[in-house]
Amino acid sequence: MADRTTDGSTAVRGPAAAGRSGTGSGDAGTPALEVRGLTTSYGPVRALDGVSLTAGTGRITAVLGANGAGKTALLRTISGLVRCSDGQVLLHGEDITRGPVEGMVTRGMAHVPEGRGVIAELTVEENLRVGSLFRGRTPRSEFDRVYELFPRLTERRDQPAHVLSGGERQMLVIGRALLARPKLLLLDEPSLGLAPRIVAQIFGLLRQLVDAEGLSVLLVEQNARSALSVADVGVVLNLGRVVATDDARTLMADEDLRHAYLGF
Amino acid sequence: MQQFVNTTLSGLAQGMVFAAFALALVLIWRSTRIVNFAQGSMAAATTFIALALIQAGWNYWLAFVVALASGFLLGAVLERVIVRRVEGGPELNAVIVTLGLFVAIQAAVAIIFGSSFQSFPSPFGLRGFTVGGTTIALTPTLVYVIVAVVVTMLLLVALFRFTRVGLAMRAAAFGQEVARLLGVRVGRMLTLGWGLAAVVGSLAGILIAGGEFVYPAFMDSLIVFGFVAAVLGGLDSPVGAVVGGLVLGLALSYVSGYVPGGSALVNMAALVILVVVLLVRPGGLFASTAARRA
Image (cartoon, rainbow over all chains, first blue to last red; front, side):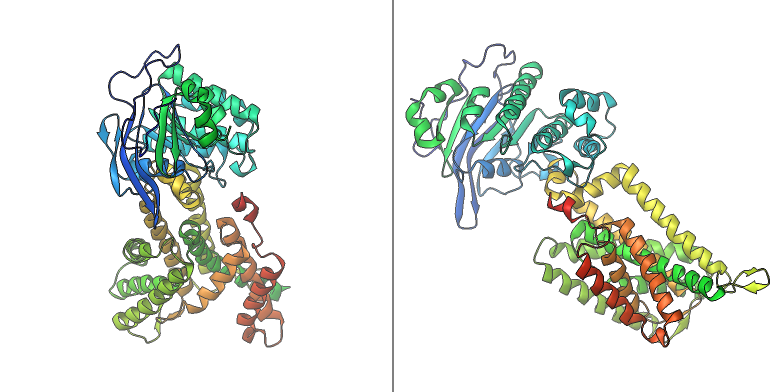
């Protein structure tokens, strides 16, 4: 049984030390992201109610829960698109709670929003360039690397992004986020509407990036089974509160929790 | 034949100015989803600035540059101070605000510069070139108008296609939230967009004023034509705006040249064209609605 808490504000355990094998960086020192008692309302509706969680450096942390659990609100509040009424967001130990949205990417955090956020009117290449705009001149090799990671984008390079399939769009937005050279990647429902094979491919690639380059990922997913299979740590949200935080495998093994909140 | 050539040429000249004006509307629509009804009086204001400088003995080109620069400033300040408050809100609010600006700026122009008719100089001759003994409607001023609009268009295309700022402006226009998340200062880009649009609008004002009489409301009819041209082109497409402007300019020129009593029908013809296009191709001739739905 995971360490379920009733109000989410207490007993949030850091990511279990028994992460995946082969993760060199571990999570010693400051975590990539720390969220403390975050509370956000959409009008009268409290979308987040004192959420606390930690995303370890060099790890994939999956935030799970049903529709309306507050997963998207969590990411939007972290990046500042939505202002919280209470709580704190620390990025590598630095308080970014009330910082401007435009400044997040310069601090090393890239947020890929729900619905993929491809800019349909721009070409694939231009979409990628937007990802590196804030950095000034970006070596061509970094673009080449994204095309290598996602060969299907190469063929579509000069086509407007609205012709892309769902999977290609997801590849494009992840590639674009990578060009921002983030230390922490926030992904909102990357599996939504994609074929299982594509989901597996994208998650596999994420794992690879995390293991090889020490990228940290906060992954929001409704597709809990796939997410837990790739994540190190899982956080379960329900109605804006954290109901469980534990090692991904432990959560996976917790049948009651799965039935109650994860729908599988 | 000669009449056809002349009608076509004057249509082209008008069309170029419509195109410039439509381009200004499109620039703003693309970035802020606002139809800027104040575009005409903003352009009138800067045209009067140019006129005042010329009357004070300034060189035409110097006055031209100052007018465009003040257009940029006017557009940028209006966006930042007034329009910013209604961006992203209900569409009607933006419409009311730009209509209010339209009236207010026009009144300010009348107060500052007077409401009488004043003649605006043209840097080039107004007499047609002579080809094989006959004088045609192609005047040096017409050549100037065409060159000025084409050069402006090319500069805008280059800005949007080949520069970082241009890419950031497009990203801000088409994917505001994503652009912010990727570090684009969207507010600044919108201010810049309004400034640029006002420059292009000012250009249209100065071009149409050349060799004519100006008064505070002299741009009013151009709002109608510019808007029709922009809608013809699909409101979202700069290329569409230019083509729409040329099509409209030619069509209106033919109506006034060939239809008996046609010069009285020009305004009506513009609106008929607008209605027909909206009925047949609601997205405009260069519809990109499919792209936007995606």
